[in-house]
Image 1 (cartoon, rainbow, N blue to C red):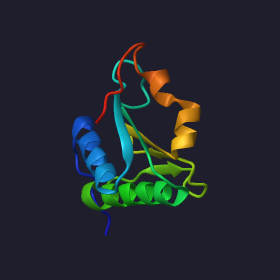
Image 2: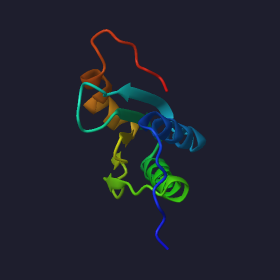
Image 3: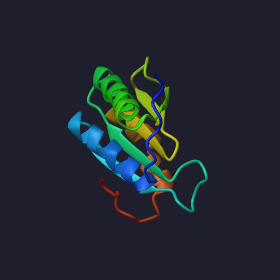
Length: 121
């Protein structure tokens, strides 16, 4: 039986994603509002896991929860390596990093306004 996707706002989707990441002990969760800055998504959520195993587990659980609770399939890249996993949920793009990899790429600096403090979720 095919599950019909639940129609929720991008804000509600972001909130559910942040809750899932928090439940799975993701660290340094940051939400960036992309509305008006990019057509790819409304929000970007960035977080860290302590190890490759935790990064993969956080990502897998998030995709499973979104499928089960909201009927929303997610595209996922990088889970096998576990250094940086990108999860595309449509309205929200999620990046789960190992801390060293997150520090290297510094996505927050690229997307947050100059001088802005991280928008902790």
